[in-house]
Image (cartoon, rainbow over all chains, first blue to last red; front, side, top):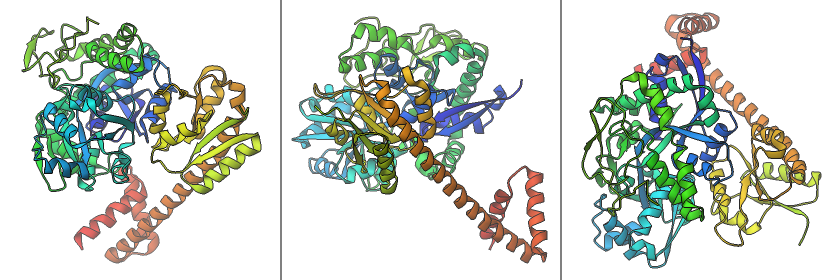
Length: 390
Length: 194
């Protein structure tokens, strides 16, 4: 097998780990691939590099391909999500001023009860707040909207604005934002800079939220099925390696290199281990499912996940929910994923859609080799999303 | 209503901003505004109600502009990134030269062409200069490290400068690495041992 070089765009974040590991730990090489990983300055840049053909694949926010299929945002090139790179991994943070008000109100910062957190925050903000997210089409934005709509925060003026995460600490200090929802390392960076405190992990809002996807141009996926298969498998093996607790130290060291994230490995280890420092005073919290790369069929691009994203985007943009369902489901390519994974012997689910939010405990489901356990995927308000009803 | 197109240039560096504005003014009659500070960027841009927004493709604050693609109020005009369509050659040239242009829905491509051409030329020049500067800086840094490594070898092995450089080069070739990398490793190791 001759080695093929694939240019791939990514944002230097902890959840780009599967791409970096695939290249550095030899998973790409064993599929005859050399990944030319190109760090991008912004999500719009990642999307454009992919859409204009500068790269063949990209680390992308899961709602971006869905938004593109719905005609939202500036670029319309058809893009497919061929696997999910990571599940969960975001955290909501607040300014020091709001942290002080919450402490004065005896809030315990339990970092797990999203309902209680929403009520506590609503009680200390009379007027309204501005919340920064990395991109208009992001799981960060979706989780915030969902959380706000189902807590007393719905009666407050919550303005969700885009702020590039590297500028978030500055924006907090300047009063441009009062809170934020970001992926790691940016939450921990804000805490260490003394700019804010972490308030709630994204997983407390939705227990199993698809965060980043491996995206390709739909056209490329269809004309290069063999290359796509090699790429999906290499990255899946990287995710499996990352899912092993013994890999954590090596993974943190790898990501911390100047070529990749260029930050201390200790900061990266917080996200990988789920042991987070939430305040400038050094408060610690542990989150079990903070960031998942492999277990619970994390990499399977469930069409129901795409529909959940599509329906929420469509509702806010005033588009037809019915049309959004079809367009969104067609973007999460379970078919391509199944074909790519066929030779690995990996267990694949029997269905391509599921109820989202219905699992309160790890649950066995029908799968090709019968050993598949899905993880809890509850929404904090107990709602269940049924992809077949609208 | 004025027929002149209104253009917003997002650029922090004052000199670069001025040179872009000059180039645009030379290419036609436009109302050009510069925004230098990222704070509240989307709101500031919306306040100008521009027809065209120009921004460096490498500027991380570009993501803040993406909000403008979703018109959130009845008076706001949605913008799109300038892509494909009638003038796709121009769009590709724009992306390659490092400028991204956002245009208001419904603006005719032929009105955009002179603006983009001027911006492309200016951004290309700016990008070239920055690349050259970065290259020069890196070359200087590497030269410094190689000199220090040569010095260490000369002292440790009692050899002259040419022999020290030859040794560095041979090691680099044997290991398939760059001379600067070998020099860097030597300097780091010697720092640890001293």
